[in-house]
Image 1 (cartoon, rainbow, N blue to C red):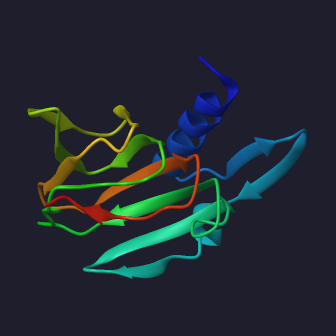
Image 2: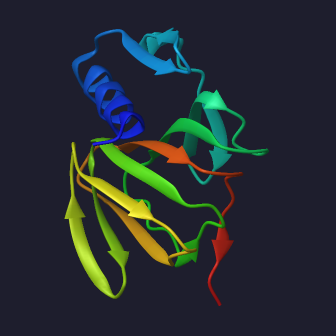
Image 3: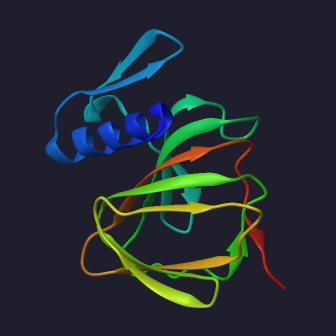
Length: 141
């Protein structure tokens, strides 16, 4: 397991337990508690809480929250990204297959992989995402 994936899993575990979160980057520590997260509205009930980097300009790490009942249209992102489900449950449709995912599940979407996410159950789905470049959403035709 690479150190970046280990950090993502540690952050996800800390968020689920309500403990302070620690992310280590380039030998210096960034410490955030769950209360320190600054959530911003992304539209359609989706919220993002940046942890490092700038989602619009380059590589970043952030939490993303999908509301109960959300079903995204088929879309892709121009940047490769790596996702850990922190809480809630989704059905991810990718490569023509449905995957039921809950807390602790991991997936990577690379090479502009088209996908659909459907929030299942009665709680929002929260993800921790590491994006290799600017974050965008491109609808499939």
